[in-house]
Length: 122
Ligand code: SF4
Image (cartoon, rainbow, N blue to C red; front, side, top):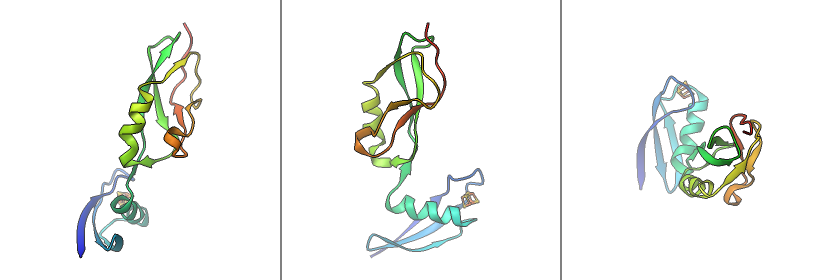
């Protein structure tokens, strides 16, 4: 059975919308995207969507109570909520430098969570 999906590309601000046809769990056709990056995004989005995770973790001894963090690479979309829950239990100690690894290999997905800014100690 064939399924058609409209996909909005989020790779760049042009936000092209294209069509993807899926059959037997595989992409059959990709059309109407503005460039090959959009086509590659759409192929992945319909089979195994991924997202960056941005959230905050608690800080002890810092000038702010929360530290913004980001996943170093894309994570499977269906694991984003589990990863956010995992990070809700994390507290880091200041000082922290942008890029410091806050949690390595989150949920054994092979992706590190890193600080997205510096945070000085009190
Ligand atoms: S298809 Fe290409 S041009 Fe269009 S939004 Fe995606 S990356 Fe940008």
